[in-house]
Length: 166
Image (cartoon, rainbow, N blue to C red; front, side):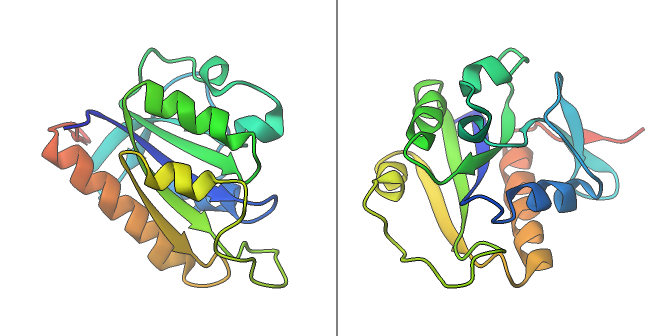
């Protein structure tokens, strides 16, 4: 059983990745230097590390962005470009289970892109210990965010990693 989780939001530029994290936290959030509390219920939370702004977009290696030693849960924006494979490989090599929402279409895309591009990102994800779901960033934001919360909650609860607000 994997003890570490990457929750990724994969999408093209301006597809809604940052909006997803801001909505999940209920405020504007940026990549930090330490763990932060993500409340999954009114009183239960999990400590997560956030990489907001994809490593590929920032021209940085994801391992250099993560400043906490082996965080159990990482939330990460993933830019849909060839370079994202480096980020995916980092998480695979470090024993993370990958739970990915692919925003297709992205919020600002006028036409729906094809489901499978030729650069192999989805194929690589599906060939490893992961779960990939395609989500429309133009609709059902609340449902999509709740789905993320529910998955993280179930994963954390089954591993006894939830904390209670005091």
